[in-house]
Structure formats: C-alpha cells, structure tokens
Length: 218
Ligand SMILES: Cc1cc2nc3c(=O)[nH]c(=O)nc-3n(C[C@H](O)[C@H](O)[C@H](O)COP(=O)(O)O)c2cc1C
Image (cartoon, rainbow, N blue to C red; front, side, top):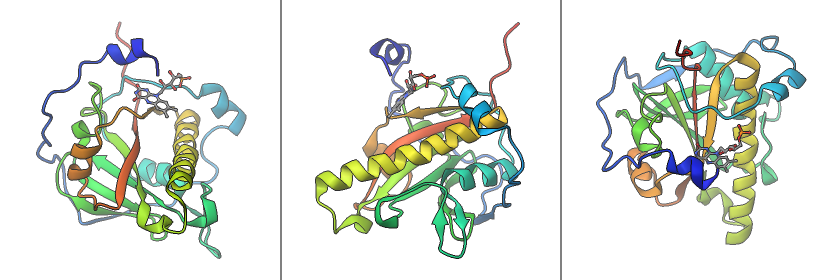
C-alpha cells in the first residue's frame, strides 16, 4: 500500500484486548461449503478489490465455513490436499480467526475452529481504524517448526508465497459472494503474538479483514 494510504490511519495507541462479545465456545464445528454457490471465477476476478469500510454485523458459521474452506480447506480428502498450495505440502501456515467471541485457530482436517484465547483481539491485529470493528480478522501465522529442513531464506520466501495463495483464495471468495476484504501487512508482531497466544516458533506474517461492506452513506 502507498505511504499516502497508510497516513490516512492513526496508529491505535496502546491497544488492549477487549472483553469478548457473544458466546465463546471451545470448538466451533463449521458447515461444509455449498460448492455451487458464488459467481463464476471470471466474475470474481472482475470484482476483486481491497475495501477498508465494513459493517459490524457478524458473519454466520455458514459463511465462516465456506470462507475458511476456500482459504485453505481440505478439497481432496483422500490425500488431505488443500485449496491452497504449499511447498512439500508442509502446510506451515495456520489461520487464526479473531472474532468478537474469541481467537480461534482453523483446523482444516476437522473443518472446525478451536479456541486459542478467550479475548476479543480484533483491535490488536493491526493499526487501522476498522480492524477492531469489522467482524473478522484473519491472521496468517507461519509455524517455523514445520520448516526445519529449509534454510531461513527459503523458509521466509516459501511461507510468504503460501500465505499469498491463501489470502488470494479468501479475496476471490469475498469477490464472488459480495464480502469486503483487505489484506494487511501493517501488523505489530509482538502484541499480536501475545494476543494469539503464539509460541516462539510461530510468527504472524499477514492479516486480512473480512466483513459485509459498510452501508453506503446517503
Ligand atoms: C502484502 C500486502 C500487504 C498489504 N498491506 C496493507 C495494509 O497493511 N493495509 C491496507 O489497508 N492495505 C494493505 N494492502 C492492500 C494494498 O494496499 C492494495 O492491494 C493496493 O492498494 C491495491 O488496491 P486493490 O487491492 O484494491 O487493487 C496490502 C496488500 C498486500 C498484497
């Protein structure tokens, strides 16, 4: 993003996690997606764009299930193959899901969300004003423990490429269903790692905000 765009946003000083809203569950079992929903791929490409205004309305579990499956779900159960590629199929990128009701981690094999931290950490996923009010902030976390056979340089490049593929899957899912989204590299790694209860081997590398578009002002 350009310096001008970044300057449009005030850094949020000393952000603290907010108390959770809604029901915090230990596990959220997600519905499998309707594979016939959404527009065509070419129509999705024509709508793909970054948006930075979101309605606060929460997303249903049906939408969450479809979005996360599109992001990096299992699309070939016989082999465990995923919707996004990863070098050697290490699947080193975990998707953390910051909702008003808590921070969850997406488990692709079981297609479910598992509670990681019972806080509303949305406002800690970045500095921009919409991050704490949009209903969903995804955080892409590389688990470097799965990449010990790679050199550090290869690890950084390959995990960034894998994250880009997942984030683009989400962007195209959003474009095909009328959701707004923006990929965000402007994150504060340390507070975010604390908020997500990450280990030393886990590094947050990118975030993505998703929600219904804000209603047009008259
Ligand atoms: C790796 C990456 C990091 C980005 N970081 C941010 C960010 O921190 N905040 C933001 O508002 N947009 C961010 N963007 C979105 C870009 O600003 C946006 O894609 C660009 O302005 C082009 O606009 P478009 O996506 O609508 O075509 C990022 C995009 C990418 C690919």
